[in-house]
Image (cartoon, rainbow, N blue to C red; front, top):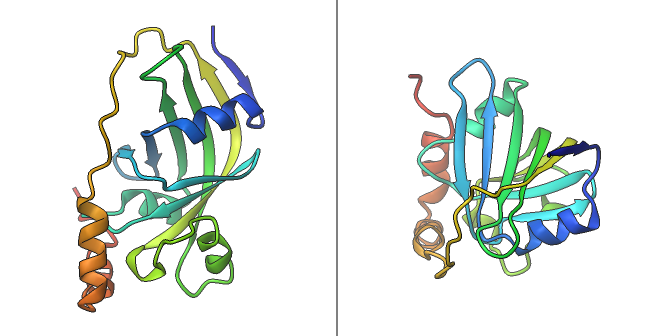
Length: 174
């Protein structure tokens, strides 16, 4: 049976920190967006606040939804060990390069070049929910795909990443 509560517990934080994959879901007045996320892109600031490092990609529905006042849900599944599913129901704030809080967020990610990322998203946790996860399959982690990081570094070195972000920051309407 699932449980719902208001802040992340110590066990929840350990589960999040050990996860190799998580999902973000968001919605505003558009379609519901669901995206898998990898790399070491999520840090726990405190038991009600998560900082997400947002690399550029092909679209940015999460940012669009948050700009429009939409909400987000983050979800982790245990693919190894004991079964577990954890969800955080959140409000989010976009932290753009040049914003007051940007450098503080960057400090959570040592070694990351600010020129290779799109922005940060601060997720303010409103509710936490855990559930059994007994139907989630066992799967083995093989490693990260370096493709996105390599691409952003190359684009930044060539001075083309900022233009790419400007052109692809808002997804096309469906």
